[in-house]
Amino acid sequence: MNGALLAECVTWLIISVRFNCFMNIKSLDDNLNLEGKRVLLRVDFNVPINDGTITENSRIEKVLPTIKYLINKKAKIIIISHLGRPKGKIIPELSLKPIGKKLSSYLNQDIKFLNENIGSLVIENSKKIPNGKILLLENLRFNKEEELNTKNFAKELSKIGDIYINEAFSCSHRAHTSVCEITKYINSFAGKQLVEEVNTIKMLINDAKKPVTCIIGGSKISTKIGILNSLIKKMETIVIVGAMANNFIKHNGFNIGQSIFEKNQEKLLVEIIKKCKANNCKLVLPQDVIASKNHKAMGQLKNLDEIDDTDLILDIGEKTIENILKIIDESRTVLWNGPAGYFEVKEFSVGSNKIANKIYDNTKNKSLISIAGGGDTVAAINSFKCSDGFTYISTAGGAFLEFLEGKVLPGIKALETNE
Ligand code: 3PG
Ligand code: MG
Image 1 (cartoon, rainbow, N blue to C red):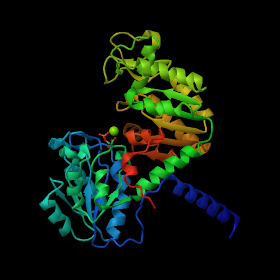
Image 2: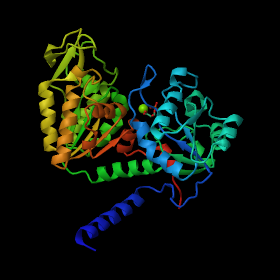
Image 3: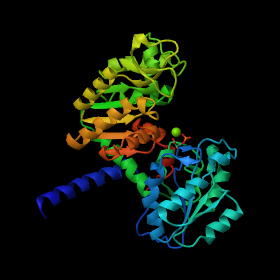
Image 4: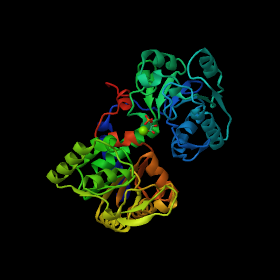
């Protein structure tokens, strides 16, 4: 065995030992005979749809290897997912039917769709699927029991498959029936993509090289407070951008005009600022912004004291961008969740675009470790054609953040074994 090969084997040995320590979840064994077996596959097809058109395909593309694997294994594949937040009502715009069409074009095979997800018709159809073919069921959240994690719905769902696979890391922070309760009634496994995602994020975080910088954007400060609180202790720098930064700008006494911000968060802000000081973590906020009177265009570069009552803050300004790029240059690990501005409109995408490109360059040329997560962040990175420059990109948003925070995700816990 040559030196390089030996080094590689040792690395793999270390990685596998660590992986095993990470969690005791039952993952799919390649020796399992799946021929003719009904495999109930929980995926996350919660993709953005605009006027009936899917605008971001990453979550569909992510599970293609698993689906192809099951096709090769000649399984009868039954796919289940949620889409949006219909809250137990049937909302035609949130049907999974168009996603079935998209999936069918990726796989080059017809996919049968049923506008139900439990009951005798579904069970009957699940048995009739030819080996290696797919049945897609309707949005799980059209049934109000999905979000209630009920025994009844779990039992009904479990009748549709012989085995169950959770391939939806991005939903595993939800204690919902199709990711949690169901595992009590059917032989359940973690999908290969889920295992890889969990292990990769953990390994990268454990191996994070200092200095570590976390760039947090997006809008809801209250949903990100947990992660901020836990990351402050681990990071050298936290950069706050996007609508989240508006709360801090306002807190610091500046006018934010008509910009989005979250009310009643003062206590949380003070806590974050205090904690950063106590832990020697640098808190970086925008110094200037691009403001506009509407979301369409015509932004103007403004210092914070120039923002007026009719302004909307839609991107970070030049000085802020320059500062963030310098921070990325000085970092050896960067975590990114949440765009810096309203990137859907090109004029307001400059901040996110420059951040993405800087991370891309440094990951490629300076071995920066870069991890990004969240639906909008992934969409932004893809639109800037930077995705192949990141060490790892997670399609998960909330689950990614809760996982980084160190929380035990209910969907992952439900797959744990005592062996
Ligand atoms: C997500 O996009 O975060 C997951 O699909 C879960 O959806 P939810 O946030 O509506 O529960
Ligand atoms: Mg979410």
